[in-house]
Structures are given as structure tokens and as C-alpha cells.
Image (cartoon, rainbow, N blue to C red):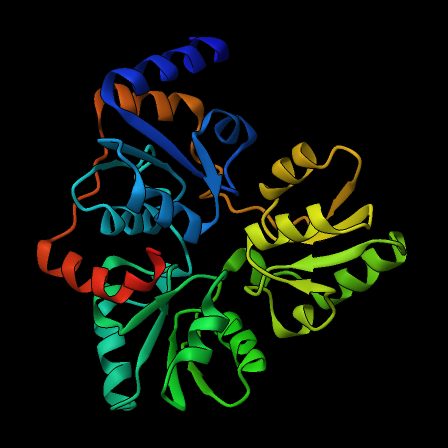
Length: 301
């Protein structure tokens, strides 16, 4: 089937099945262009929570599909490629989190959305890159356990200095590999450009940035800025939307390592067959789902 044929077929299937396609900002351009909504993790959860569609096709990675199912438990949630995982989410398991809690009793656990449903069920509160700082500032506890991203934990600590953040030692392999020297080299190469980075980067990279935020916050900042050139320090998929929405501006990828291969696994054909056959449905045990939903409740508004 040709690309145009797939696009027309998806349009027809969505109408027949009362379905929507949600895609993360890191998905390939063809997926972003065909999706009903493209956004960051927080926005995808919020879209899922309010949709009237009966079927949600989540084009992203596994933890995102689980999060969407938690937000919309009555909907049929499909993940086009089941083995599209997340290395960061895999760095902490439910039993490990239980041990971590025992090591630090009576301290609340804040989990990053990049985590499994089981980890969310063991946590007290869930955050995304968009709202992590505001949630932490609003928490009554002076000490907070944060899992699984040490880099996000480090960034939160700088923005909420009155809190002690005790972080798990996980990380996003894609963002973690960016080096401070690459920021310096890009500034020399593009002296008029602003550096926009994701807080999953290391502290040394974050410190060199002009702006730090989630993918959507980076997109909004670039759109609103009077500047015309930007060095982007997050997964390369976001460049498609940035360039599409800002044709008069230039965007440079901070590092060639900023490619998440799991995010690039999903093709239009995967999307089509997932919806046509309603395959790869996400299912979560009811007990886990309810506990995880309580943990995520602040994300739904």
C-alpha cells in the first residue's frame, strides 16, 4: 500500500471505529502528520482523559500507552509496536522501588511518567517534564524520593532548593549522552542561536542552556521568541514540528546522539494494522491500574 493509501485508509478506519491517533513529539514526521494530536507526555495523557473516542492508538513507547490506558481505563488503547520500550523506564522495577522506599521510610515517592504502571502504583505522585517543578514546590514534604531519572531529579532540586531530592540513578540514554562540549561547539558554530534543552540532559548540559523545558515547552518558547535560530537539545523528532510551525526560523540539533530508536520504530504501516486489526491492546491489572490512577490524578486536569 502506498503512503497516500495508508493515510486514506487510516482516515476511513478512524471514522468507522470512532478512534483517534495520539502521537508523541518524538515520532517520525509521517506519524506526526497523520495524527489527530501531537504532544508531550502530559498532553497525551490529558487528551486521552477527555476524548470521546472509543479507541485510542498511541504512537510512542510502551509506558506512554500504559499511561494513556490509566488516564482512560474504559477506552481500548492500542500500541502499534509492542516492543517500543523505554530504557529509562526499564531501569527501575516494582520490587526495586519497594526496597528503595524501605531504605527511606516516611518519605513520599514522586515518579516520573517514564515508568511502568507497576512503578506508578507503588508511588505517591506522578509528574512529567512539564509539571515536575510545580508539583514538587507544592508538596508539603521537605524530602522527596524521585524515580527513575537522576538528571530530572537534579534539575528539580535546582528549581526547588528548599526540598531535598533523593534520586534513583536511572537516566534516558539518548539525553544522557549529550556532552557539555557539544553545547560549546554549537554556540561557536551558531553564535546567534539560543540553546533549548530537555531536563533529562545532564546537569552540566542544562547549566549551559538558555532555556530548559519539556518538548512542548521548547516548542512554545521557540514559537514565542523573537530570535530566529535555536540549538535544540532533545530528541530529533521535535525538529519536524518546530520547522513546520516556524518556517522563518532555523533549528539545529545539539548532538547527533539525540535519536531514540524506540521512538523511531513505529511506521505508518504499523499504525494502519494496529487500527485495522485492533491489535496490541494495552491491558493493566485492575488493582495496578487503580493505584496508578491515584498516583497520576494531578496529570488529568
